[in-house]
Length: 114
Length: 109
Image 1 (tube, rainbow over the protein chains, first blue to last red):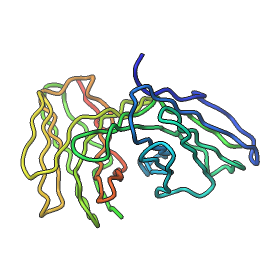
Image 2 (image 1 turned 30 degrees about the horizontal axis):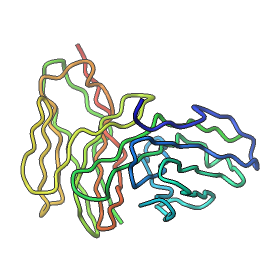
Image 3 (image 1 turned 30 degrees about the vertical axis):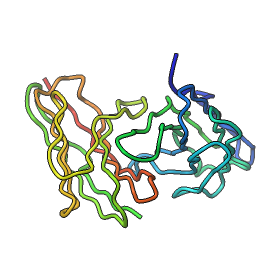
Image 4 (image 1 turned 180 degrees about the vertical axis):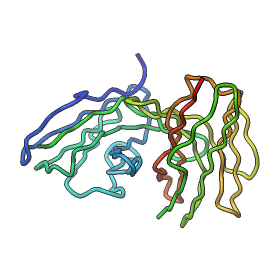
């Protein structure tokens, strides 16, 4: 099935633990993104990758890291989780950066840090 | 950066029309998107505007005025399944999207 998958669906994590959220797309899209969504704040960009091998910082990158070793995968790592990182995390991808190319979103990962 | 404002909530009756306004201030403009997000689900693309004017897609239309930093999403012939959050997003000169907090639309019978 074409699209974006994320894993896990949900996770409860103790503060201080390391966690990697996985994101895989099979649409051969060049660009990929990680957002967090918090009530009343909307979606905020954490990190992005315009093409395999490159990454960039978004609006709220602190405490998170990403890698883009290939076109399909874009994992997000929390090196030492804190309660303020409790959120719903969405991965997205787009074929190109401009024009009418929209971003397609994965189903999300609900993360709770205690 | 971007500053994007849209109302928090709107309620309308089945069969009616609702207009969701979005105003933005941007350091660089490269298009405006509207997404629909049902509770507990991912956002899905609704519309895209880059030039001034109205784009119509079935029951949904989106309008843009770049000089006013203003857009609206018009939902016609409302159905119960249209109850969702509607997200306004502006793409900047670096091709990154900034989202408003979303407008929750409740459709009542």
